[in-house]
Image (cartoon, rainbow over all chains, first blue to last red):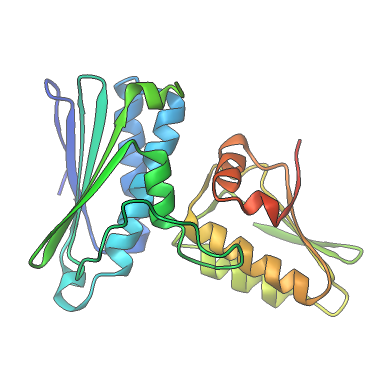
Length: 145
Length: 100
């Protein structure tokens, strides 16, 4: 699906195949979009990381028919706030209110922590066969204030 | 990415990104390159523009590999964004980090 950008609402929507090789392409598109909209550079770095972590999970935890469905991504800039949505087709999981870091020697388990640390608000909406991770960042946070 | 030996250290340079696509391959590639003469592993992150939790996991794995050889994993010249993530995840406490 070619990216769709709505100039007035500053929205970018697109899909990627359920494949890890596509995740960095998604991040690249997001980075270009946010740069064009003059989002703060430090905020772009954080948003890119959160988006990558969300997409990694969406791909890595997809099962069965879910692996054949694309991952949908939406970025919206409105009133000084960035909202990112990632729609996955995984079985879903319990989103922690505040993720803890794993043991220092753990080789995995830091993704959700990084999403929550880089974004102001996160919400995971679970539905049958489809889940949406909503991530929000204010422009103040983006500027490091 | 490039590998070279400096004394008892296996040095990795030209690491552009460490993410979900290449993290496991990176870890395995470095481990395969280790010989009996290598005690330490050094990863130059001066060109690394992006790292995610999978990349961090690969570095933790190499840290454990180095420890098993009674050596250390050194992260050299991490870029500011990489250093920020290392601090955020408190991994800067277990890695030996040599800043610019």
